[in-house]
Image (cartoon, rainbow, N blue to C red; front, side, top):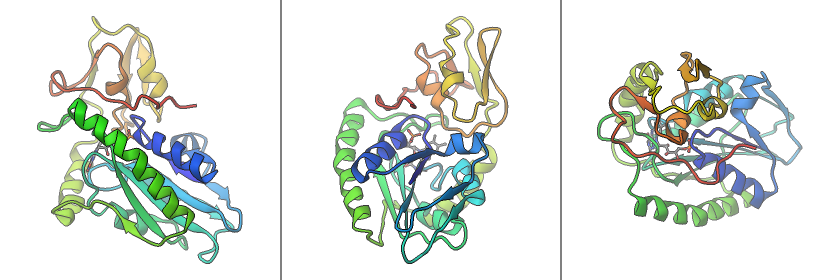
Length: 259
Ligand SMILES: Cc1cc2nc3c(=O)[nH]c(=O)nc-3n(C[C@H](O)[C@H](O)[C@H](O)COP(=O)(O)O)c2cc1C
């Protein structure tokens, strides 16, 4: 069983590829939360994967909230195997440690992997999407990396194979705390009514149903996960975040439509 969360499709692509290679089933964390489904029955030797993007050098708050309520019926440390795969633009800090500490008792985090993929964080000054050549080389390298990760999972290796980056403690504690406190608000999102075509894609692809169209333009309702699906997927660049994103690029994985 592979639980996943994804905003702009990188983690969905990884989860789908792993599911294909391992013959596993996928569960969307956002759908599970929307339907209040937190209890899952495991087969005796089933592996449990969690695939999600790195948000400020840790797992996204929505993933941690889900893990806090998750019940894995039939889990045994001896026969089940639990791993995480986090996608990131650059590095993940102490994401694996935070994930392990957040697992529901008595689940043990046997393995943790990171996969570098195109960056989607554009809201703060100094952050932008990757140049096209970097985007393409990250996507090409990710194929091999995910295939390697799948082999590690199939062999049930107990490893932590992540790019922590420099200043990992500072990033995953102080900077992360600042980010979670001050940079998770959807107050900055706005839609340019002159550009918006009322196509409803932002509403449809918001994983937490935080967007509705009102008089044809999107309104955000305060329970945003900061996945940035809306701003990156808008086909006419009508969505901005304050004045910081007008000159920033946009990115979403080309193979990321939710089924
Ligand atoms: C709110 C937010 C915070 C992010 N923080 C980090 C980070 O700490 N380190 C990093 O390398 N990438 C970071 N990123 C980039 C994403 O982790 C990366 O692009 C990821 O592959 C996006 O996955 P998705 O397409 O499945 O949503 C961040 C992105 C967002 C939206």
